[in-house]
Image 1: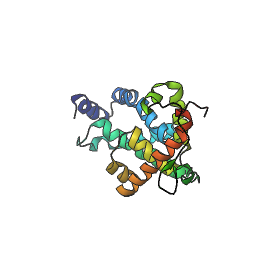
Image 2: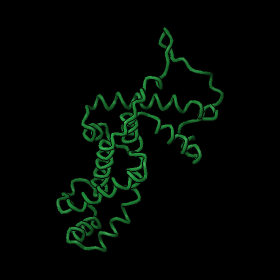
Image 3: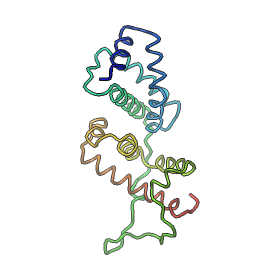
Image 4: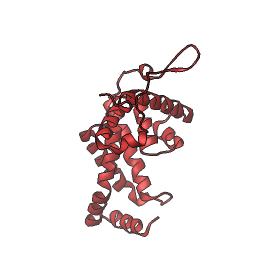
Length: 196
């Protein structure tokens, strides 16, 4: 554990208001970004962050330092965001099957001719494209979108996602594969330079 973290934990646990306010200023912005990527709604994300801060402050005295403080806080905000989503029951009934690649009788993927090809990294660098990619991610059904966000954006391990969502690691891998394939199909017009 970092020495700054130890001091902050001790001060917050002792009820030091300035230390608590500093902690909120330091961690609030990135926590809101994480929550927004998961719940996709600013107001719900703010609620998730507020709930996460409450949980952090209630339990900070029990933080054992086995992980970095930020890692511990990250896990709490992800859990609070997921719980808020479950309560809101905002899951869409869109099937992911229609977004999967299509194959011919020989098992070859059927796709339109590509005019130009840009790498995913090139697409994400351009800010106007970033918003469009984010919008395409939002079109995925929640049970696939959340796994894609947690694995590919939040960079959690398969095991961590499995534990957070209460599903098997194999199920995480299958959903992640299907989500990536669906996202690729949604992004194809963008990659070809067509309007999306």
